[in-house]
Length: 577
Image (cartoon, rainbow, N blue to C red):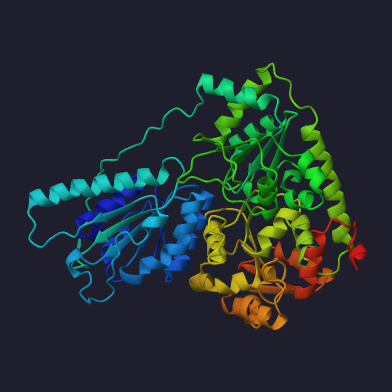
């Protein structure tokens, strides 16, 4: 088999393979030819070609989220690497190990009006864990120079992968300067590269420290807050044991993948919106223990800022200092599963009596909130909430992706079960939600469902080109005439209708149906409950093509239904009218 004559490119790709990289998303180009040829010669890495680098990066993000392993991105020089930025920012804050390898012109040609040449090294430095630059092989270089540079390439790649995977994972950027000629080939000579392994330190709390903190926790009212995180059976078991203590309650968002069997702990806003100021003061926790990523719930963030705990313990590996509730007192750089396991064991043995009814009080409020929520939705008219409630309650959900905007917010209100749930909440942007789900579907053997809005899907519909969407994928588009979230949130909902529709909701967007059909996606449309029931059944049937269900809902009525949901003055929708 032949490979590139550029020995550095071959070493980079071979070493990435040895580090466990098994998937690569690459985009066409000229300058990255040696990298693409080297990649093609390594059979252990599966290659996906995506013309649009922005979509390629989000697909790699989704693949890595589901596989929970590093994924390689390869692009050409110039603006190509800039198109990676939205997904790389998401990967940085979401803790996803993407390995960006960008081709570049030799240093001497930067700022010399040569085509597709920018100041490329370090262009992602603020949103990656590390930036690395590999110089071009100078013409006429002797053996001594190339051997030393070979050592440098090996060291750099080992360092980059180690950085991507240590502590809280994240993206890294390796910039490779490549000089002409770019297309020369050579016989492939497989060789084992020197692979450097990182041996982690003990993930334990010291005995004295454990005694100190478990004593403080044993008699305190404890609220555990869980933002987005990858599925983890060990963490789920450890948290369930910890939450069995009578002085502990949990508020876990659906995308934390840590909900209890009834998904009751996910009903955060449904509970908080019905609490008075007196209730909130009464239930104020002494200690908040937070883990995972950024929260969707503004209500929970505001509650803990308005009624701050005496102590806030932040648990888990992180790449930055975070004080979201303005109350952090202690940061534990330890895996949450080890923390909760050790703390539970120590608190059970503690002689300090626990607050006996704190967990029970929250449980009662959740049960009342669920009963009220079901009654309200049953009486509500056709709307986003009504439709999504039916779908999440009646569909078989394996891997579920939800887009930012209204989709992720509705998913927090409705108890549901799935294998795993994902959302791009690192940055919380609208871009790339569909591409991320497409990448996730490529990494999963079961069915992947994407719940999204019409604006989000149209924005990222280009990822459906070149047959990228798996036939196992099911897409639900809530078509409420544009950005429905802007009709609900306080900062924009009061704007004049003309301004709202034109500049924010963008109500005159193209129709979803013909766009999806042009990409070879089967489409079914529903505009009422009867059609929705038929659509849900159709969505779950076997097919050789991906399927998309368009749920057309009235925009103003949907916003009104959701606004009224958060008013605690009544028990049914009709009470609001």
